Length: 359
Picture (cartoon, rainbow, N blue to C red):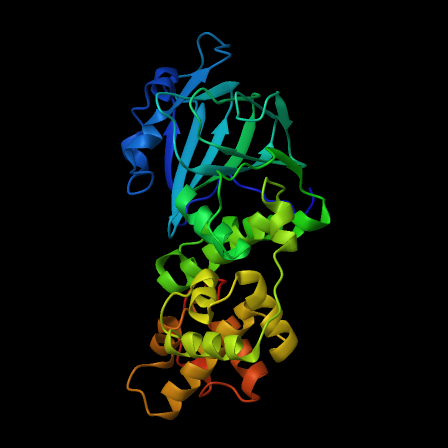
């Protein structure tokens, strides 16, 4: 298996709620949905209906798990894990869903039909899939199948698309449904999905930290908009303007004030009064860095100031308040940035059996 390819595991527990389905009728009836709460609470998710395409053997053992459904979430993203012994189909009914779904297959195959782009699309371990939850869309999975699906609110993608374009989009965002994971442009997206899977499989994932969730969501969605072809890809590539130092200063002031709060890149661009493209160019040309790295540095500076000011909170509390949930990674970043450890930080972090791995 390619170590860089997104993968899932039947052993995932961590932040996932799991429904192990033994009754063949339970999958089609959807009676397992309450077991997945508090995730996938939006009523429109009940428009996802599953059907068995192959019921052999006709009398399977009563204790056999035929399907496993997992649910988790990171901020505004809903994350689903699906594993089926038998061939199944998913059909979106009624009015459909407004959300987009990014899908990674780790075992078996998947056929997608009925999207707004004509044709039948074959998806496997080396091919990713993204589609919108339009009514009538059908996914047909082979037996012994496993995949991860990330549901993304349309409004979230449209906000970030407008930030990249420097203006609101005039028409709906339409992705090319399938793409190869081994393309240079999709490498970062692939690694982000692998990281997300590992995190949600751990009880100490970053999903309980609002700042970390917001930062990861921002990075994932901007990476997806740049990596996966769609009807605005060319405009994003050409949306360049000449940066000016005043814009950079406005962005830096906004970042400093929000160091202890979630920060989305499009919010930084709005505060700087420029497009996201211009923001990136401005930081690259005038600060030799990126807006994301500037946010990270601002958070580290804020931690240092809090510690220097005799903050009564523990180092762990101060760090987590700034979105740092992994002790080892935080200590390493702090020492790399300032040349000294954060008050011998490793000694004052609470001990954990399985530390998270975000910052």
